[in-house]
Length: 284
Image: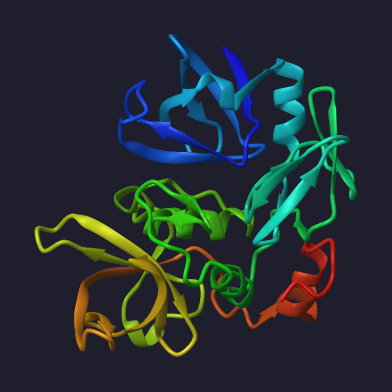
């Protein structure tokens, strides 16, 4: 098995080794992959984080050793800035929200022998349970991002990509597609019992899970549909006030975070926990 890392801002993962092929997902800077095969200028890879496979442009990834792969996988610092430049000695790489900073030491990260300085906001998720408030704050950073099939960045993102990236920055690993994400977490019986940070899933009328979003306070939902937007959620589904109609039919609500997360164990509040996760102040 060999490994590689994304060395550009965004690298499309395509269903076939061709530029016109469907984009099934994206790699963000610093995300690692396992390499399976090459064909011409394309390489077939599997994303380490979520197991999605696809064809990437060979020029957009960089081969790394087993030791580098293990080092980068131990603890992943991520950019919490909407867009921020990663500064090398003679050039910048524009990073988006959620990009990984390999080997980050609080000021610099490195990719092979190349060293970069990063002055944006950074988060290093850990295994501590996360408050719904923190999930909501991250999700709101994507508001008005355009919808893009297979996208995972503020410049284009799909519904499942939004959910996956928000939870990734909260230290939780979600699968890539709504039909797979719905298998994670535990069910919430009634919409009146939902809390901030829950996931609401919707079907396409044929019984197939086709859409997902993140529950906000007041039983609203942030989701990607045309753009990342907020709509009202009830037991029927999602109501779009601009269209004056329901646009998605609710199937189930799932919870991945702890119940009653207004306070963390031993009296530590959600705000205290957030402060512990974030390496720089005044993020919002």
